[in-house]
Figure 1 (cartoon, one colour):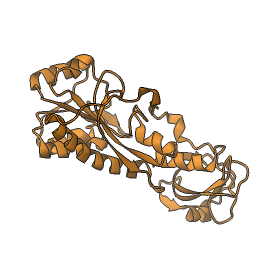
Figure 2 (cartoon, one colour):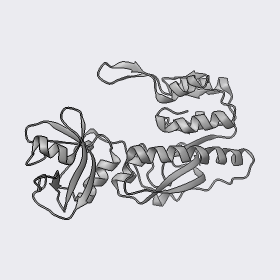
Figure 3 (cartoon, rainbow, N blue to C red):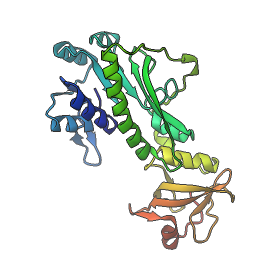
Length: 293
């Protein structure tokens, strides 16, 4: 059971090492400007692997599909829906979930984004035996991964999804062989990663420069700000600088260096109002902004 591209390495690894009797993913949804119905990445990949795909719209439909398929185990990776107790009890080996954090930290929908936004230096993957809670199940295995200074949401997702697929296969083999004793999570240490809100993508220049940088990394490539004329630009990459000024003020003549609540950031890469990816210095030569809003 999976939906987003994060689940693709796991799907391929499961197909290689086990018999996948079916793939459950979310229904096709309207996407982009034309609002054309678009299949989720897991559906596309599963069909390429000649696997049977199911797209139930309700929890009762999920239950009925599983009762028909009679799987030994259900593996859940970035599916995006909570499973009921009734569903969890169907497979003899339980429902196993790969989660992109070191649980109990960053339970919820956006663990990779929230980890980067918080400036964490370490993250990882956890494989759990699912229960009715949100990422609260007993731990079967976990593996840490350092967060590099240049990591953003895309690069860290790729690393975690690739490594997570291997961890998942290794864990399942040991789980089926009876070699793993599930370990309860330390619930008192739990932190949460709620879904990203639309307003979080807009940069607040009153925040400290390190916080601005971490937000841009975590929400890459969709963080944005406005020029004084109202045009919107997306900020892709910045570096933190010590010089300060009025928040939002451009404080260098040639470099696109913007003052924050503490310090400043030099914008190294951005998407200009015409939708083109440019360097900060090239942007300054063409636009010469005085302030970003």
